[in-house]
Amino acid sequence: MSFFVILYEEVVNLNLDISSAVATQVIIMAFYIAIGFILTKIKFLSNAGTRQMSDLLIKIVTPCVIIEAFQSGFNSDTMPDFLIALALSVGFHIASILLVNLMYIKSKDRDISVIDKFTCVYSNCGFMGIPLLGAAMGPFGVFIGSAYLSVFHLFIWTHGYNSFNRGQKKLSYIKIIINPGVVGIFVSMIIMLFKIKLPYVASSVISGMATLNTPIAMILLGVYLGESKIIASLKNTNMYIVCLIRLVLLPVFAVCIFKLLNIDASIAINVVLAASCPSAAIAAIFASQSGKNSGYASSIVAVSTVFSLLTLPLMARFASIVFNKIII
Image (cartoon, rainbow, N blue to C red; front, side, top):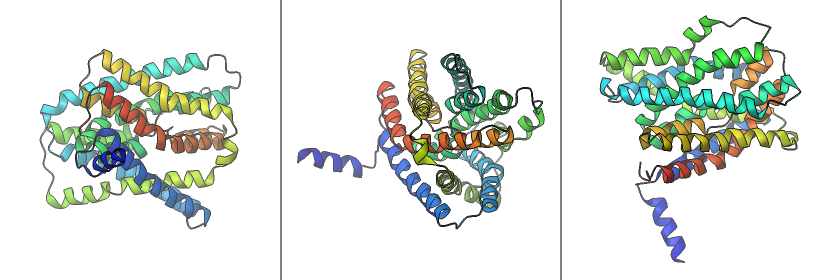
């Protein structure tokens, strides 16, 4: 009986530890995902409507989320934290690419292998990571997560894009420069470096748009789940290998390396959480554009998203124990 009393006291305690905060946010996200799933099954959303929601999220909402993070009391004094997070994110992506390439070096089906490796390396740090960090870690979480997000955009539009289109299309550097995520980072850094304070009206509009990030992003994930053949996908054993690498092995690797490097706990945990998100949804888009199996890519995104509802709180607990940072 005393166990349940202690458990109740921990739940109602305002000083939630990191894993509890993540678990709470994951539950909220699960409800949003369920809404998207149901809307898809009852044919409430059309394909055109889904594409428009996705464009709104990527081109408008995501930059607003990033800009708001940089407006929340941050200034040039916090630049060292951002640069550390940036360096960690670059190092993590490079190490992940090398490790995953070694794991799939004997793969015979190149088209499937490309999807497997991409979905192992790249997390859904924008759609799922930013709202998760904002809810669990506050504005500082979004601030550090923005560093990871900027590196993510740089890598997916270079290494990721090239891996899908090798021998088919030339790399578009314009897409790297004008990508909404990168533009948001660039504008935000100017605001921070020059200590620009946006007018109340502009700040309120940006803040209002930023609040749309979690519900829209998660509803879209629910749509992807509803459109995918998730039951059939669960019979594919290869799917479990990808999920294990993406959701467990690479995040644990990051925790161990960051601990050995004696990285500040707050920065390290935020980067780890961004790296612990499910596979990037853009994998399905790249697969479709390059003539590869977009259905398979969508299924990996869907299955990894479902499993992440369990693994994200566990990774948060593991990281908080390793870095001895229990209270937010």
